[in-house]
Length: 173
Image (tube, rainbow, N blue to C red; front, side, top):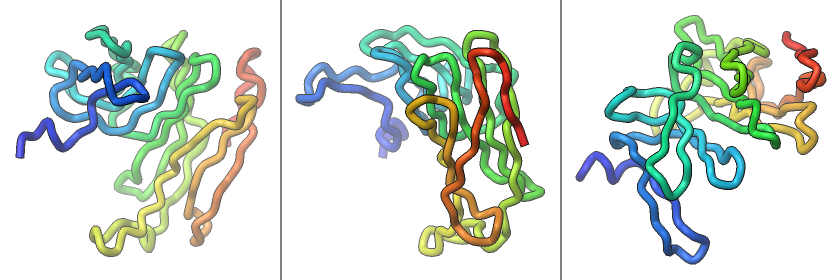
């Protein structure tokens, strides 16, 4: 199978027309809309390799996002105003997962929280996929986030107040 067929890397109108293939080099992982015609995705490009990129829909416009701020894939979610990207990491070798807030305007990363991921929630195989990714997302007013976690030993939906991002009063734990 052609490697490019393994990854979703296109957009289309609601009726299935207007298909546009984004200028990636095969891999596109997790995506989030950033406004009406922009998408942020963890992807691979011929020029930049793997990383977060912002694509303009129905064009070949692409720009890197946070080149020196991220070292791996995550699950991005954009704030209502498109300024802030919320994402996560997979467990590192010490079984720690991080929640990250990234200021798209100032090119700054803020580690909001870190939680231990119990070994019992490590994905052992496809058949026993127990892994619990954070999949962070915003509240409608962008003052709180929620995420899935198993740091207590049980799967749970967690919520966390962020503070007022417009004033820079960011809460971290």
